Image (cartoon, rainbow, N blue to C red; front, side):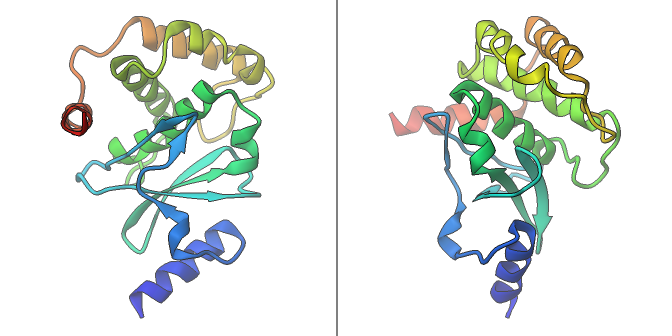
Length: 181
């Protein structure tokens, strides 16, 4: 019964019927296999969908952390920007924003994703500078997303002034990647 309720909830979230194989644990985003763990260490699943109304969204359904990505919107972006948006949604789970969202949550997620991207070698400063043509069209949002030019400047500031220590999540990812080599 619980599993059925989960799929019904996901179908409602996505706006169409969902199948079990649509929940990915290691999606390939921008040609890079990605994985996300929330603040508890729980694996975050990814749902590729359409008509989401945004590039991505972080949510919890039946106690399962989920990143929903609009596959049409993602395809319209360069690979490195797809990685950034995936990591931004992952950051909401890592930082526990699903429990206590604030107006600062979006900036915290932006900064975390840029720091993780730099630390992991997935993003360079030049990659972030390349987001400009896509971000400049954004007016920001009432939920805390900065307007395009301000958001780009903020991302570059985060990249240039990284946090001193990677989170335990980052170390866990590095160790897992090294053990697969």
